[in-house]
Amino acid sequence: MIAFLEGILAEALPTQIIVNVHGVGYQVLVPVSSYERLPPPGQPVKILTHLAVREDAHVLYGFFSAAERDLFRLLLLHVSGVGPKMALAVLSGLPVEMFKSAVVSGDIAMISKISGIGKKTAERIVLELKDKVGVAAEWEASSAKNAPGETDIRLHDAVLALISLGYKQVEAHKAVRRAQDVADAPLTAEELIRHALKILS
Image: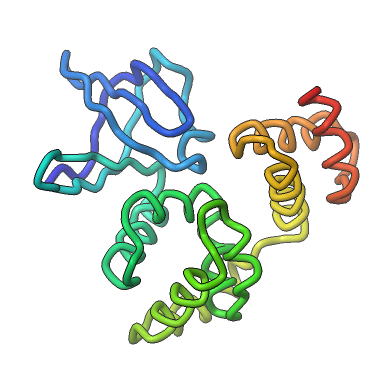
């Protein structure tokens, strides 16, 4: 099992990266949440990994934080019908703490807004994760401490709105973050959408 890679970031795309480890380039599939936190290509990087062994390939999945990798593995192991591609979509669509809060509160609507996740899959995710002994209890205990703030929710709502208008997830994330970064004060979700649309146009 390959637990992590540490080397030079040779190439970075929204869905995959290549890490040069002593002259060997490892291709790693990553969620948008990890991609956004990567250094520029050419810089040192350490990425946590999960190796999936299939009949036709060995595939490495990479994560910037242990929380992301833990959630990825939890979805793979404990939710029927969820494979690596869908687990990456979950991580790309919601920050880990927002996802945990949605599961604890049974917020099917929030989870089903993730690209590629329908209402039935969202219901199955909530049901099967809540049934796992200790998972929901542990998340509930930490959700009050780590609950997403108002700013996180506003940013997320703006990103989802842009995705629903046809923009790609990565473009939407970047535009919304840039809109907030250049603002003098916190913006409402509607203001974020308006400013982000100007940036995207």
